[in-house]
Image (cartoon, rainbow, N blue to C red; front, side, top):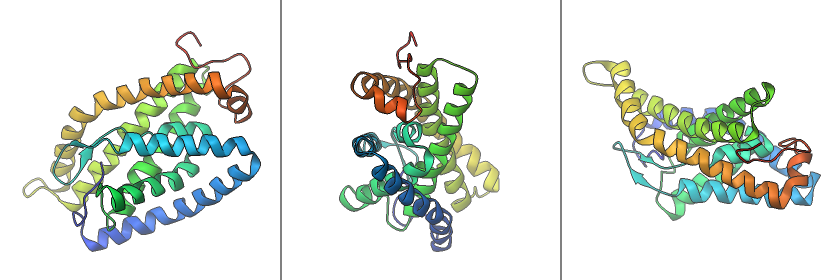
Length: 228
């Protein structure tokens, strides 16, 4: 998903920066507000950021100019809402570009928009939808994590198709090509990320259940296991 340095035209790089910046600024304010509300929030914020950093640093070769990996952004979106992940995800992507040469600085705005904005918002919407219909908590966590992952790659496909339209079929042909490649590699990863998310929130339930209840993730008698 990390679009490499120089793979997007300068004008599109600028456009994605412009689109992402308001979300990141709003997310920074949300992180500050959450940190001030409770010291325990700082631990969960750090855990959400570290989870995203580790999962998204697993780099698997994919279509030219990008890569495949889990994203981990659904966890923070469930805990604190998607605005927080816009900021945490940007910090993660910036460090990965500088320290790991994973993604680029000129393409940072595009990568932020797909992984730190679009994915978390989609995952959060799925989480809220399933909570509203009283689905099991584990199913909500699994679906939110998987959807956040898949939507990230759909947006990356869109970005790549805009930048590199097919010579004969144009934007539509390029989008179909990028989506078909990402779907084959990403669906298993999204399912695996959903399972990992259930395990992560099961752990959180054991060590930080009062904080999950306070944040509205869980109700008093809930747990994130397959029996929830």
